[in-house]
Image (cartoon, rainbow, N blue to C red; front, side):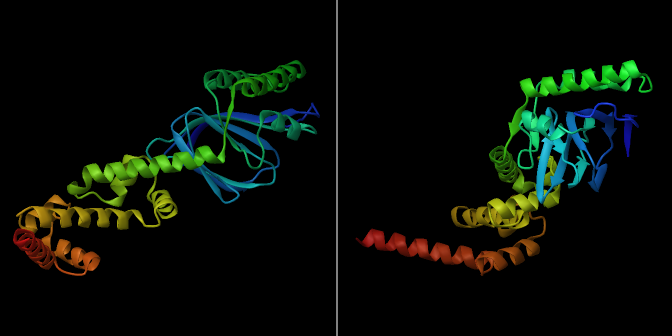
Amino acid sequence: MENSIVLQLSEIKFKDLSLCFCGYAECESCHNFGPAVRPNYIIHFVLEGKGIYQVLGRRYELQAGQGFIIEPEVSTFYEADKKYPWKYIWIGFWGNHAKEYVKDLGLNSEQLIFQSERGSDLEKIVWKMLKVNKNSISEQYILQSLLYEFFAILMKDMIIVDGAQQELKESFYVKEAITFIKNHFSNGIKVSDIANAICINRSYLYKLFKKNLNVSPQEFLTKFRISRAKELLIVTQLSIESIAFSCGYKDTLVFSKVFRKVVGVAPSVYRKRNHEIREKQRIQNRDK
């Protein structure tokens, strides 16, 4: 659900560019809209929180200070973040030259995301729109002037968020996830804990790891734990139980089973083999 205030215009007076509707919404966790196709352009701007926007097989993570455009006759889907649901404003518009105005903003089918530091000014404009008496001819001109003012602010101050920046953001999430794993792997964390820590959902985390590392988050976490266990088996005299606990496994049998699956032998066998190899090397070096 969402708490929203909407202004809907039934009559389009201006032919070149005209406001169709506008609104303000505070969304609840995971509130979504779509997939849906609209007959007109819509610009959303995020005031607080986070959410995702999906269009043409692409997925964008958005946060406060960013916005996105919906193009006519294109299927889209957007959803509020589970932990930090967004609050946003929007304007819907149409006209014979609407496409040209959108182009002037620098937005198109490949450039759908933007950011601006003038969010408070854009919000003020939308609130002014919402207070207008839509049945008054004179106030329709006021709405038109506010629409142009909205465009003027964006045209002057917005920055396009291109594909490279989206890739950079994805890389940031992966790095943050790896850092979290390194710092907390011994605490028995799960994939859901990693996703929650960096404020994305599990499915998106899985997608990012497969895309950037070619392994799932669970595979990465398991291999990291076993790698640390191998180190401890070689350089310490800790018991298998203590090593299992240090690597995030409360159950020694589960640890041994996972270790054998990854390494090919039991932890005790791995330790014995490595100690034998090191002892053999020590003797060889002593005899030289």
